[in-house]
Image 1 (cartoon, one colour):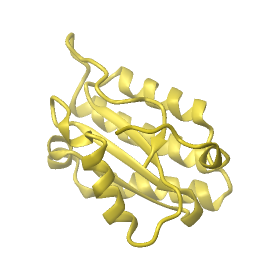
Image 2 (cartoon, rainbow, N blue to C red; image 1 turned 90 degrees about the horizontal axis):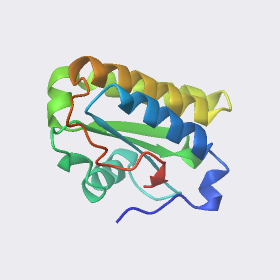
Image 3 (spheres, one colour; image 1 turned 180 degrees about the horizontal axis):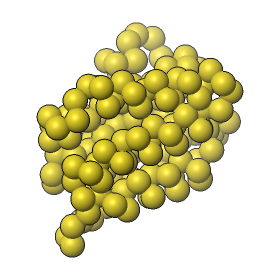
Length: 147
C-alpha cells in the first residue's frame, strides 16, 4: 500500500522538487524511480529498505528496472536498491554513489538537494541502459511516499 508522506516528514524534504526530479529523470528512460521517506524506526536501514522495496512493488516493474531511494531523515542515512535488470548492468557502485550524495546533502543541511542529486545519478544510468521506448508507461508514483 502506497502512503503519502506525512506533514512531519515534509519538514525534511521538498516534496515538489523531488517529484519534479523524478519526472525529469524518468522522461528519458523506461526505468522507474521511487523515493520513500521513512520516519524513525529501530533496526537496520538496509533491512527496512528491502522490505519497503518489496511492499511498494519496486521489484515488479515490467522490465525489472525499478529503483528505490530510501531515506531516513532523522538518522541522516539512505540506501538505494535496484531491481535485477539494472543491478546486473550498473552494480553496487551506482547505489553506493547515490546514497553518498543523499548523505552529503543531509550533512550540509539540504537533504532535498542530496536526494535530487541521487535521482539525477540514477536517472542518467537508467537512461543510458534502458532508454525510453514507445510503450513506456509510468508504473510507480513519482511523488515521494512514506517508506
